[in-house]
Image (cartoon, rainbow, N blue to C red; front, side):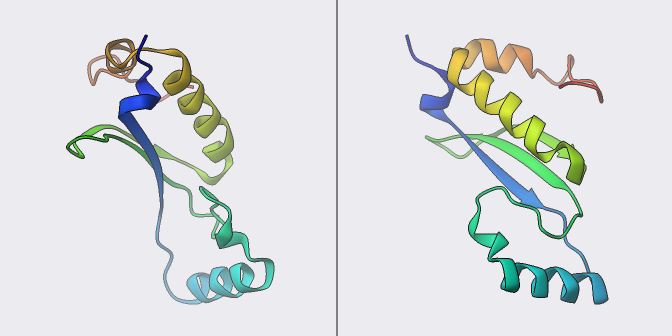
Length: 103
């Protein structure tokens, strides 16, 4: 059976910081090499997880999250991509069903 992760791709887009916060985040990343870890948000600004179709790049899901939610949301999305079929994943994240509290 085809899994959602076979045809869909998950990526993290960090929210941008400006000014001194951007400088501090850049220094922190340089010192810790934190930017070498995929999905890491050393800036503390949070970001957005985006799920796209591998074949055509069509965006299916976009979830804005806070810095504190990064790990749990990534784990949740990765589990669903590994366990659900593409149709089940699409149904679970249909725009009509998405709420702010979706884990």
